Image (cartoon, rainbow, N blue to C red; front, side):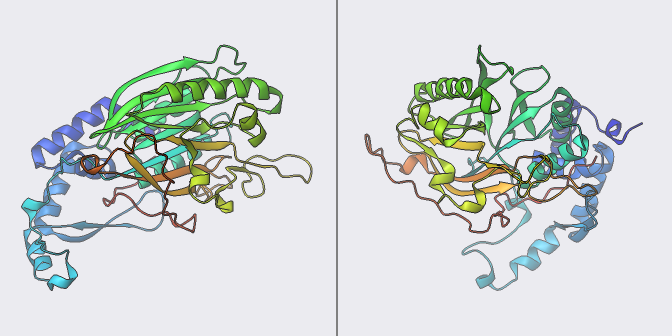
Length: 400
């Protein structure tokens, strides 16, 4: 029996999450915290929760993907009173911490994290370990929206099982396809549709998903455009069709369009350039050279070519069209997947992933400036490896 057989399917996992939350009076995030470390054993997880609640303090939880343990802080009434006794200068102004204050918030989040990544599912070398590493990186960063490309049926099932906190939407069921993931705790799925590229020789299409975070309405365009230089004309046709979908989206919706576009800059020019009001988030983030190339054979050794020439390309891109009034503000653009998978000489993929952090603007305080295109402001972290944590809760790494 493989270790994966110990993990229930996604429906059973979700049912146990809900049951845990009901019995303990907590939320689903807390439920997953305990269940995932105990292979979804409900009784063990509930017992562990109440033991931790009774004892309080700091425990060590072994991370099954590294030698270093994860530090878990459990807060009971005793610990809360001790924290409240700390001089007020060390605590947020006018705040006192008691257990009854530690409740699930119904207020929509003020931030959003987005990832897009070609996970190289067509390469069988270390595929399961690499896919697991992708899941771990997603799990650790808790993005609200994930675009994946080169997903195979078996890797899609693996991702669904390892990341039950995400709703997973596939663009097909063939040899490989794209997938969009939505984090259930923060973003709500509305609908999706698939736009075919009829002249594609590689079965490519455009996956369009509509979702919302509070009042923020999102249209998410995930694609993997035609590959290789020989198919440049078809790639430009697909790009133009995708831009048409983007520009036809109602102006009250934020549109994020991205994925592995396999795009060369000259092809963007041939396609007519960016539509009005659409920005390239790498350029908006300052065009940092260390984040430019997402397929970089001078740094990533997963794919080897004969000869001394090592190509570097900005195949993976993210475009943003703001809503009217403006609803989000990008503040960070960086790369992920830069470390090799433990126990291998492989990176998670031959592509680096892209991660973007957004502030979600307070819709009640936005004043519409119809017809004006304000300059995009960004607050970019300068070191691409120093990815700022957006979510505060520390969760355990998925077990293999």
